[in-house]
Length: 106
Image: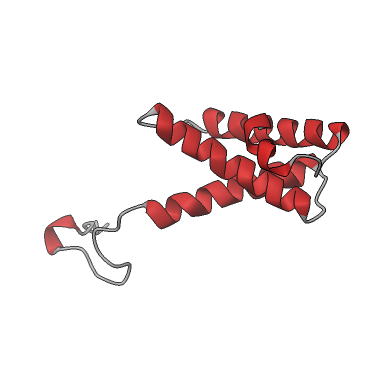
């Protein structure tokens, strides 16, 4: 978090910085405990950057609640992942017949 705060010197006091650091740590712990994996260290660092950026921006807007900062950062990370997931076909396109689930008559 401290590396991300270099661009915002003087924007936050020591107590606020501790809140931001804890929010980032808790958000990162949530991602790790979820079982999410990253193929490279760079991908993991990109995820941390998304979390930190959201936390800092929310704090600049006045948010100081550590849980809301954490939750908002996790939401921002999840939304960024949704934007990056390649889609093989549109959501309205039906899969080929061979890929459709078969109904079981019972």
